[in-house]
Image (cartoon, rainbow, N blue to C red; front, side, top):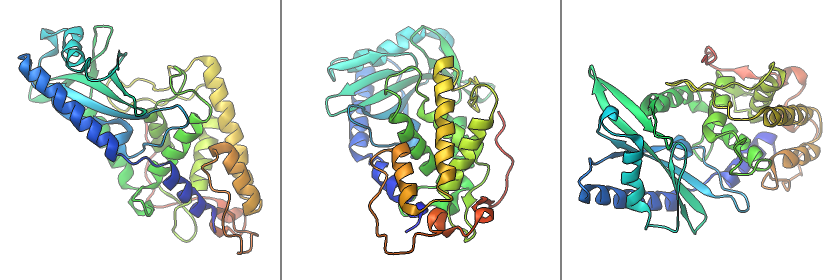
Length: 336
């Protein structure tokens, strides 16, 4: 068995199934729209957002929660309504729907006893010179320019180059690597910590770091080398990790981490890099032990070891030269 096969087994274990979340989302969305209509407010369109729509959701650890993001797009001109008023339309519609509704910065969070929450993101949309204009309603009573459709297009376009890396679950290398790193962060950083990178920050870090699929010499996905490439770029970069959102307002998604948290994150990437590079040289048994330390107990350590272990790591890499990733369909790295 190869390390790639073990990574893909790990991916299957942490990949979230979204049927129950989808049902709760649909029930909640219908309730909100019905309440808004009864109160005479404009009816919003609903879009899926976040890890749910990008296919990078993972199962939560321990007392962490499943999450899903939903966008409510109101056909209104932002200048004619305050963000507080529009958020109140939604908040009032759901405050009796569950025991826990939180009015947070960019969203309204609805918590369910079953161990998951739905984040509701509220937009105003109007047309300016035939162009769609989106404004995000924040809880500090400010409208912030936003481009949810363009962000989705950016991510979808980036993943197009990775179609050939899809595994048996239909996930491509971008999705798998993002899930690995999200679980890696979950093991170290509390879910509600202000210093925890968002799922979008992790996804865009992966996209920016992988301009093309990372493959082995047989044209198969090589997730170990993809992780090494990302860890190298982070570890060897000077100063803070900077990943700017590719759409208005182009904010740095890692800016929220304070200096201590940023130093700790880069130190963890350095440790991850050391262990990943060691996996190129050691036996498969020793390699999976290192990977289980980094990625947790869901990383498989029990496997059929009847095959020779020597040179079995990294999909039967024969020597260090073959450990260098092969890029298919080269493309320019993402620039922000």
